[in-house]
Image (cartoon, rainbow, N blue to C red):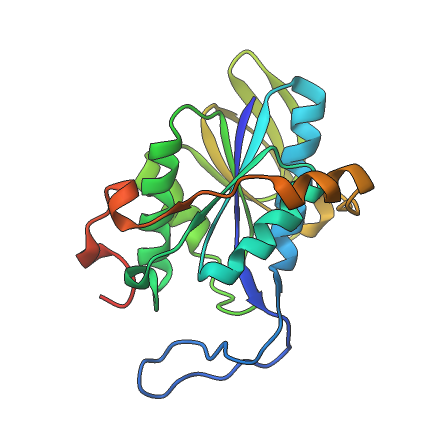
Length: 219
């Protein structure tokens, strides 16, 4: 399977401040971490690769320091990583973020599954996953708490609902968002840490992915 996992680097604090002029998050001087739910998305991608073969590509849109999050993902089992970084991406809302991620995934090319965390701890909207699926024109399943079966170009998943769960079958390629009940993320291995230090992390800007600047960032 060819799997793409979308990660976000977020402020590692419970309360974030908003710039009153731009209405964007203030990130200066704050330690950043991988969005917690995205670590479950990464773990599930790596598990699927181990079960079915293939590779996992992680992508992250952010400033240059977001490379740290991508290298951490490589240390935990991702095969390759791409950083989407451009001043034109700054200040993006969920729609602009989904557009930028979709253009990058189109550039990556062939894939079977895109996995995202259900939501981030900074924006907390849960909108990027479904918006991304719409822009990629792929089937979408949210609140995935388990992958039951992958076979014959289809995937069967368990989806959490308020009073239980649903079993949903979807054709592939597809986009899913996962909840923390799906797995327990692994710690980096020594071999993984060593590999992450030398792994290439290409940086794609708006021109590299063919994005219209009017659709990205604060614009």
